[in-house]
Image (spheres, rainbow, N blue to C red):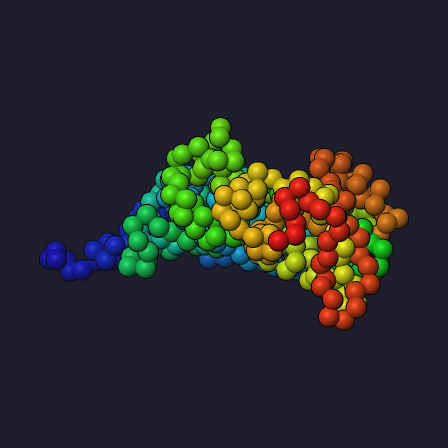
Length: 358
């Protein structure tokens, strides 16, 4: 111990390094500015001017999430440039389920020892995703906690706040029998089910830098770190038509766990099992990983990231709005029909190429 006594640095916390990191990410944060944002990393809280956005009678919406054990793959492969998009997408995609426009985002980054290059790569990914989502990164928290995390480990959490005009809030109250289900494809596994993914990888004794069995031109780690899609632009364009009755974000729980959340009692979804082809990563998990179909459906999105519930009369206008927003892969997944008490809320018709029946 020095003559001046113990210091915070002796305990493993470097305040100067933290300050330098905040200065380093300043330009990244500034690049996410949008109407209403007032980013100030020197302050104690971020500010946002809701009136400047032009809302008349807004409802505030908020969502928070993490990226689950997908983070372990980023840490073990040393690839930290895309996990920030996962964080933003997992939060913002929940927000747009109710027609909300994401306005601002905050992140929480915790580690045992701050590695500035790693943290900067993560925040750069967050900033890029915020720009795509149209929301400002107005602040966050970086916590250095020696003894809480192993060397090289870190954790992430995100928080998004948005708004929607009261009369445009999507709450599922208009959902009815005969409504059509339009699905938007996922970019891959997104950020759910990675504990099972990692178990499959471990049981097959595969290395992260080996060619991916389902994408030989990429390493396994790179392929499994494919970032979660952001559906903000497409969902907002569809919502503006006024013809969207409900939206379901397909995360943990898959289709059987998430679609019923937006359906009123007495209605169920009848889905066409042959409406889409299971993407290669999921076929590999199903076949090489020996994951049974029911487990696949309730653990993974299986290639479908967002489901829009629209009236049959509004299908064409919603499809047109999605196309205008750049969405070319819309899948007509099925319809809503009356469901007796006790019946499965999600039922299937037809035979999928990947053997829907166990």
